[in-house]
Length: 261
Image 1: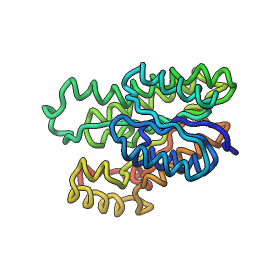
Image 2: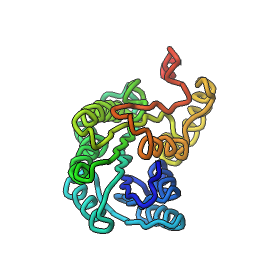
Image 3: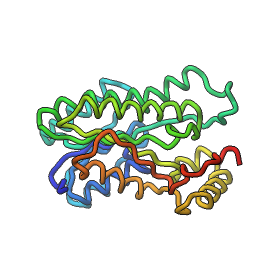
Image 4: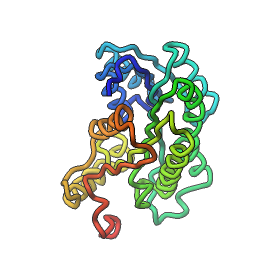
């Protein structure tokens, strides 16, 4: 599907999967909103990369956990282009905490993680949906995680939030049709600085090798490979809504969880 001249918001697009997705959309001629909450320098770098693709961009600092920020981001997008065709809910957060450490997570940790990963996504969809409905067509892609399916990941709070996001994708897909399609991607281990910084280099490298050895495809995801699937959902597949796509090299097919090995 041709998306040249269309407009997309990519939340959390200063680096990693979000930046890779914004760049890929820009390469296809789609105008993009680069959203960030803290990483100003990286967001400007991401914006410049997209501009070099010959599209228009909008840099928007906003915290998706704040409903006012979500509505402002959509309003600024409409103010600049008069349209919003694609929404990629990629912004996410976590607290790295061993699942066995039940005292390692507080109520505030859960609320903060849910505030971004679940409530933030809901608020962005709520702000964008009326405009997509009026236009007659729109596509939303939520970046969940295999953690939400298998209960693994950086913390129990993170896994629970991604499970909630997957369920919410189903609910939203059901009520927002026929004009708006809502789907989710569920990456496993994603190579890059986010996990490396959170886990520490030694644990990161060992886990990466272990996962690649155990996965049928002997691969783990990169920001680019995740972005390719996101854009495929967003720009094509007109008959698909309410689906979740697992991106983990087939590791989920194993019957023995890595955590027990």
